[in-house]
Image (tube, rainbow, N blue to C red):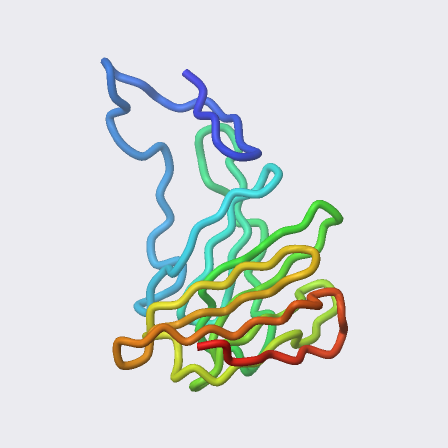
Length: 161
């Protein structure tokens, strides 16, 4: 049996119609603070956590192997996810105090910093070639920040709600 996921093909154990359980486990990857996201990209698996780090893993045989642990920015204490582009760029989404932060891992620079109250809020971020949108919930209201020129180095965001 082969497990097929985005950018991932690896054999897994199988007993009957369902797998008997995980093929490989790594306990305490992000300590007591917890894992916030898992993403598959190319032939790697990435996890982010509230410890401010992301881990890059690979499946070797039927075991998870740690390739690296990275703290992208000293001030990012709560990582929420990673985004990848076709040119090999990686962006880190996270929070520093009461701000949402978008960090470019390749150039090691902050691209976006939005006051929002912190990572405990419900939120979403999306981007395209010409648009960036960050939305979050505050006191039952949805607050949206939008930048129509995402290619610009200077990020000017306007509250639209």
